[in-house]
Image (cartoon, rainbow, N blue to C red; front, side, top):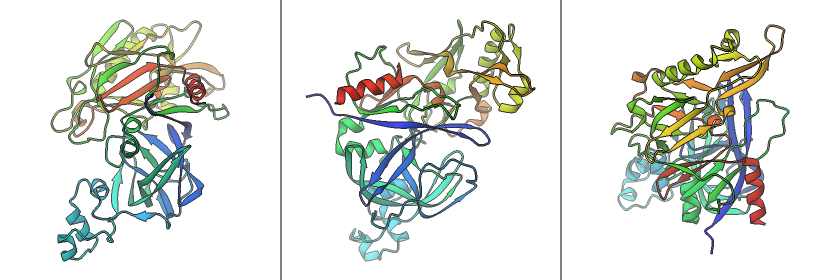
Length: 421
């Protein structure tokens, strides 16, 4: 009997507010409110599933894309202060403390009889926003998948976060962890294959497959290149890996020591994050990569300085004639594992008409994540979803590793659907 496989689709969403932000969304329903679909950002960099609930106030959300309408959860069940889920939402605070905050009487706390006292509200923050929420339980349905007693956060107030998130990180409240209670084979391994980005809003967007469980990938082409997950004691929900270096053409630039491992304080490593758009590198590595890239491209193509100022990207070039761009390769720690990025994953080409004349421009799509000395208390770099496009990225929780395989993602979706039917 083959292991369980469940296939979902999630869609590309592009926001053009003050900067280009690319997210992928997935949708589901709650049994208590089956007529309203809930659409959330899929994020491997967080460990909670949450969405806005009525009444909902979002501060500093003007102009931000909103994927879902706030939900009425009056028919859902509140989570008890005694629940392990409540403790997880409150950064492992003890259930006794939480029940005291919830005003459960002392004699009931001592006898663990606070099931009627609800979990207090909790605060949750991202790098660019935050919210306050309460925990609820309900039955969740995604396509033909049905999950009872699913725990989620219900937010009535948020800062710069108008749309909820489906957290796929490592944690008790994440979607994979809760799926594991239904079937370990579904929750212990998942992968996604991100369709290629296009900043053209009129372009028809094809679904990206989100694969829960295992499937026979022998017919899909290239095999996975694996690298081990690194444990982060301060941020245990992150999928961290070690980076040995980045090659630009034939020259390999060693990564700083902080990217090769995670220390006891939780510093270092690279987070593989579906919820961040562009790859962020520490300044020392970023500057070395840019310098080598510019040395090869800049001697042939003219720098587009005004485009750099306007877009925040760089280096950018006006492209004339046949343009040769050096390959960029990521070298991971262990097993001599490396991934060669397709040109479109790191060099974006478009037409710019800023000076009244439309000219072809190309920009390097990597970002400076800040000075190395300031990157303490967390990961040293982030591998964003722009650089993951066109790869199937697998999170093998059972074997504690992340894998990458080059794929035609739209074709993979069609192929897996044929196998299901």
